[in-house]
Length: 638
Image (cartoon, rainbow, N blue to C red; front, top):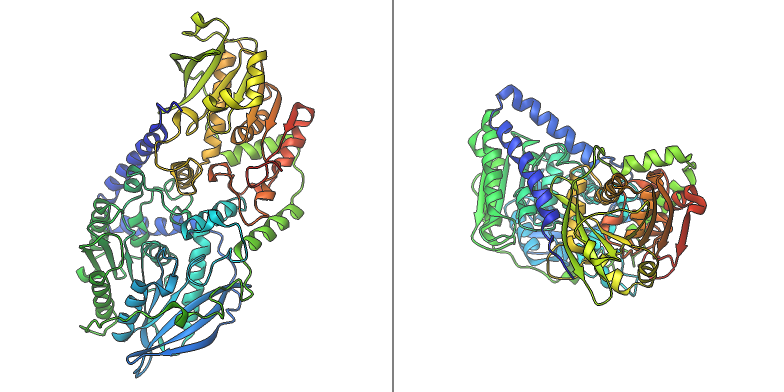
């Protein structure tokens, strides 16, 4: 497949983020102390907006179901409910000799399938307990004992915890909810349990974690002021470095709207200045150490602005690749001990225990123990929203769709380039690059009856435009609908950004849940935009160009992902006379009502089910729409 524009979308986002990143850096280092206090308050407000809405607190129904005795500490096996029916498994580490309320630490697990039983996470908890801390380490969704899909047989798409997180995340987006908030809420409720224990001194409470646990440490530090010290590990760099390095992050690591608000990762630490924090990194981490040192510089500078003691900010970069290895654990324990008033402590030797010994459920799985899996929460919410929704009049529906797609303004006529044509055994295709935005080109093809005319754009009064599932080149050669249309018309076909000729270059299939297409969707959300909306925008701007060149009526044909683009375009643009949809979904609610959805994240529209569903769009189009072979959530014939 021709992919001459594989870096186009990446470069587009990098250029935009570099500009914002530079503006923020310049502003940060020009702040006075008074301005720094205002900046901190603004950062806190932006973070809370990114994680809203927070649920209501409900009874934890916490219980201790077993104990493990060790010479210098004991471990209680704990169950609690972060939401009604949402069961969380945890281990509470208690020093054997406590004279009174002790300092405590909440341990957030990284992306290990073993969760709290991971040897490195057991090790930091044991070392903290031997130093005199009460420690609670809890399992994240789909790690340790919290596999949400344990009752499913066909579950390859969620076999890895990161893939499972992205599955949950994209379905939650239809409800306008951020999976990172679900993850953070588990941590907030874990802290509620930790502080309920009489052994804990609530004035000395830290949080630490590595990788995905470093993420949760960073988020929770900013969200909950009950934490008095923090040690995020192997996460802090910059959003810009992750993007430049083509490093997709889990959906919980991409808070919606934070880039629109002008935030960087360091701001989540700055939000709690001047409380003590140590930034932990690794020299060979895939989270770029240049971004780590940049964040260290920014946090230190900000703390100095507020007059904080030098010891309130520390940075320790270990000698390893990604992981919470001993050197980092020792730096964390000593930092927490000093700020908890324990002075200099000896860091003991850890002895990881078998996972079965630490399990809080009989079979090692919460769903098998009666917990409600997250996909049922999502399904029930989608059903509730469907019951409450009122049908929107067509004009309101069109306005709401435009709002959710976050469409930019359309001014003037987009410039186009006449590219080299393509000659196949059957046809010659003219090619055009339609410049829909600065740095973005939608690639348009046209079947030419006269090959010698392929170096200019001459447009008929009636235009038939095909939007492929993945790539025009593939569909024009293989799809029966596209093949039949080519026999009838001088057919146009359009590859919007990130599809067809601009599919990113990467290892693995386009459909992978952790690839570049997913990453662009995630960065779009962080910019407060819709990547799906930008693809619809590419179609609309192409129609503007073709109309300027003489087209008066448009007939759209969309397959799969292209079907969603065709559907939304037809509803938004009255110049579209008719639209034919093949292999297109009929309902977003259907995607929220099943455990697994194979459609890529870029097709999910944030918060749509609060307002309408695809069925409403189809109803509004009436007899202008023809449906062929609809696909279900598995991208197969329904």
